[in-house]
Length: 120
Image (tube, rainbow, N blue to C red; front, side, top):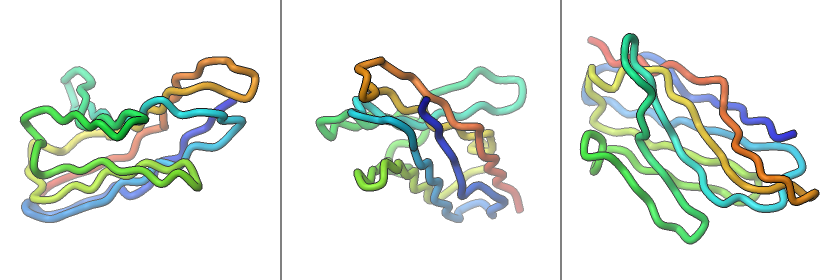
């Protein structure tokens, strides 16, 4: 069983910054990729940042240059640094981690979500 615990959401003014954290725990043998998604009210969940095990990253144009994904291997934590936040960034943010356990079972785990509100 792999658990993800997110933190760092909150209320921020337009132009401000926030850093989200997501700590993964459990019998994790290998992490293949880590990512952040968001879902705004009435909209579908969308990818905002992706980090593969070889260090490659992927961002949609809507956040490119403003959001940065990074990782600490010990512990297994993924971060999302968000700068120059805009009201349209308001959403529930979820982290996602994919990998395998000590028993070589693949996992695809999701965090509980952390709310980011950008408003003056």
